Amino acid sequence: MKFRRRERRLAESGPYYRQRGWQMSAGFLAVVVVVGGVVTALSGSDTTTGRADAAASEGPLSRASAPRDGRPQGCRTDDGADAASTETAPDDVTWRPLGVTKVPVSASAGPTLIQGPLWWCYAHTPTGAVLAAHVIPSHMSGSDWRTVTEQQVVAGQGRDMFEFQRATVQDTDAPNGAEVASYAGFSVVSYQDTAAVVRLLLKSTQGYAVTTISLRWSGGDWKVRPDDNGSLHSPVSAVQTARGFTLWGGTT
Image (cartoon, rainbow, N blue to C red; front, side, top):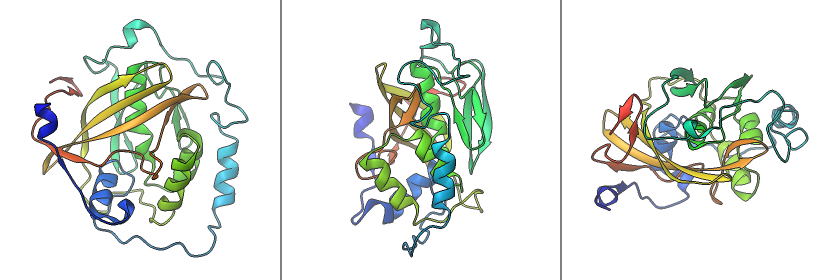
């Protein structure tokens, strides 16, 4: 409880996706990196939508190919009890550039398959959920965000809202000099076979901040479950310390 009282919510009025605080938090997760950037209005139809949606519909996690039970073809992970601990970061984690940031990947917990913009096949464990919470939102700044959204974000009102709002923001495949926080650690708030909630610890020159990602086990892999308002993560809150989080490379 003391840890939570130290949090400072970045509260602003108006639609959340037009707020500077949302743009900053989105930048942390590589959804939008220009802090205070201009959000343009939708004008006419998106001529790339059909092509992107067609490619997404043929992906390994699409409704047509994803199995109701088990894993999609070619997806194999270590889902044993030893793989489920989140008291320490996995020993086999390496960091790979993705969009405007770097993300942790693990040969044992995922993503074990990379097919174009889709980094997928996560272990059906808390650690697999943790890695999916880092990787999937980090795809959302670039031009392939529609394909990733179709395949790796849970369908419904929240996804529809995210797509509508994200379409108003310019694609950003590189930082362009804007500060982007790094991923410093994580904690698993809750875990079930069908759902998980993960908190991410972010670090920038201004200190630590946290945000929460909800996930669902769907189509044989972890997917991000957005809020009904279209947000892929909770509002970012500043914290004074990293206490209560597992740090990448060690524990708190």
